[in-house]
Image (cartoon, rainbow, N blue to C red; front, side, top):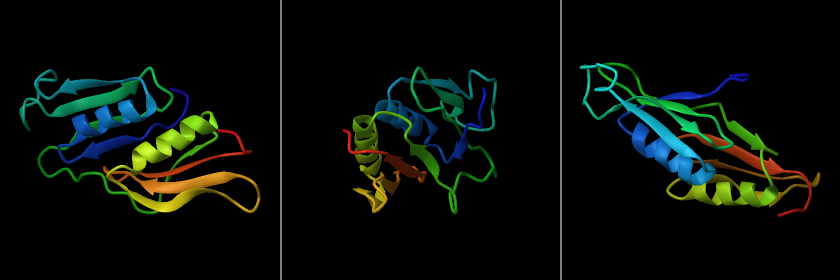
Length: 135
């Protein structure tokens, strides 16, 4: 790895979240269960470690067990500014919005760039945008 990668501890939704993100961004979700890791502190089919492969966005996630607190986001966004072609970014924004909350609609700003913010159904706050009038 050459850059920080978010690692989410989710309340039993890691499988659904990683599958969703693989559908949104492309690629696949690689999932390893508690049972595979020899863990007995949660359901055997819970995700002990999962991640996205073969796609443009890097993300890790696991299900929490016991008293471990689950992910909550406040005061942080994941930025996808210029991370792909404008048409991809528009598609990602729309997909992340499904079941989530649009904080600031994807729109062209006074300085010419296009951006918007969405909190997806798993609580991640995304900033998505691009320069120019493509897409």
